[in-house]
Each structure stands twice: as structure tokens, then as C-alpha cells.
Length: 369
Image (cartoon, rainbow, N blue to C red; front, side, top):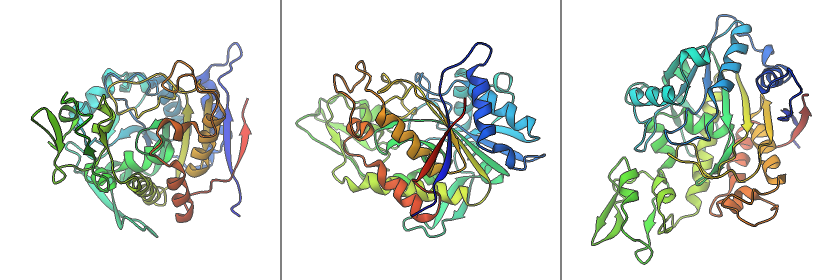
């Protein structure tokens, strides 16, 4: 059995004069971030800036607190993410930075600059070997991430329509992949359209960056020669007419994300912070966010991304269901995340990450007041 990893947790309760930002910095300190040598080192803070229209992403205030702590430790922090595959506000670096600014992430609000890790068009990448990988030989990682000396993941923990949840592994693995890397991770699943359910609304056409869906005689058809399997069309279909016929593709996606995260984390010191707040059912890549499926829980931190994700999952699955969410009148479930997206299996990615040596699902939870 693996030796349990330490995962540090703090609630959202604050006494007078002690803010959540104070608690976030104290949490990271207690979790041992100061044992990393930051002196004059470039530190990438990997974050999701939020798709315009989405309001569930982390506030820039949290990023500013982590930036401040890194500077106090002697580091040179910058905020970073890679460009996206899909149509939206973050497909290339100019729009990406503009979207970040609109969502409040500026050098003046956060205390550091933004660098889009895979460059202007998403092609500035480094191929990193995946030791022990079963599905990926060379992970295609945004160059700025690999040029950094230290990586901190600052993650909004949430549900996800393809992977079951979005946590530290996904923030680092999928988020760290260049556009070609994201395509490699997504390429196993190609959705199909149920013509009896399709109403020809065109949402799938509008969301696709690769001209995969076509409307013919009022019914959508997906050209698999163009489709990269990113799954964005599934999320925007109002009648659930689009589905992936191969449920194993989500499992492969989770495993590839773990291999990408392993490639990055095995190359340099990494530290992970996850905020379990605004737990929306879907990814922050959406241009909207549905009601949170559970109430806000707290902040978590660890050197072990696997243990951290498992602790966040357990906390969400223990929490009462938000009756105003898509979960409706359901009571507390054994597995809230899987119930939210039944075609996903979040366990697969964590189990694969554990086999690779990225971390362990066994953890000891240590509360920080």
C-alpha cells in the first residue's frame, strides 16, 4: 500500500481581521511551499482565466495572493495557460490575454504578468518524454511552462462533462498541452448525432473550431475526418442529440491527461492548490456556468496532485446536493460527480496517475485554521 500523502485543508470560515486571502497564503505555507527554493527562479502559476461569459472561474484576488507569496519567497512569478482548440475567447494569445484582462487578470490586479505558454498561435511547444506512458510517447507542452523553474497549479475544482471533474491533474495536463497536445489527448473520441433528436439548431456548428459538424436537410452530421474529439458540441446540444458512442474514449482522455501531467511534473518542482468553490457541473471553458452542484467547501493544497484531487473529490461527494442545481431534488449521493455526468469515470485517470508514479490516492487530511 502507498504511504499516504499530506493534503492540507482550510474552511471558508473567517474570524474578524483574517480574510480568505490570508487563509490561502497560510494554507500554502503550512503545506510546505516554502521548502521549494524560489530565489530568483521563474515560477509559472498555471491557472484558467475563464472563458468570457463564464463567472465560475477563480477571482484574480486568489491569484494575487499566490503571486504575493511567491514574491515573498524570492521567486519571479507569472500567470499562464495554453490556448484552446475550440472557438471562443482563448484560441490564440491575443484573444487569450484580452479575455484574461476582461476577467480581471492584469499585472496591476495580480502583481505579475501573463504569458500564454504555447505562444501566439498555440504552436510554441516542447516535446517532453512520458516515462512509462502507455498512450503518449512525447507530450507536447507549452514552451513557457517548460522554460519555468517551478510550477504552481492554482485550480478551480469543478465538474466536467468529459472527465468527470476538473482538478489539479487536468489543470496541469490538459491545460499545459499546446493546441497540438490538446488534439492528441482528445483524438480518441468522435461523437455522432442521433437524427431523431437533432433539431438542426446549429449550436454544434458555431462551437466547433474545425468545421466538423454540418447541417444537411435540417439535421446535423459530424465529419470525423475534421473532428478532433474535443467534445464541445456535446455540451452545447440542447436536446442531447450528440453523444460519444465509445464510452472508453473518456477513459483514454483521462489517462492521457495523467500522462501529460506526469511529463510536466516529473521535470521540475510542482506545488498544487485547489479551491473547491463555485463547483459548477461543467468546465470553465464554457461561455456560461450552471448553478454549483454543491455548496462551497474550502481550499486544499499539497505537493501530491493525485492525493489532492482525491481529497477534493471526496469532499464534494460528501457534501449535500444543491437543490437549485441540475441535480434537482436528489439527496446526497455516493458519487455526485459521476451522477452529474454518467458517461464519465473519474477513477480511471487517478488510478493511471498513481501507476505512473505521479502520486497516491491515499492521503492524510490536515486542517489549517
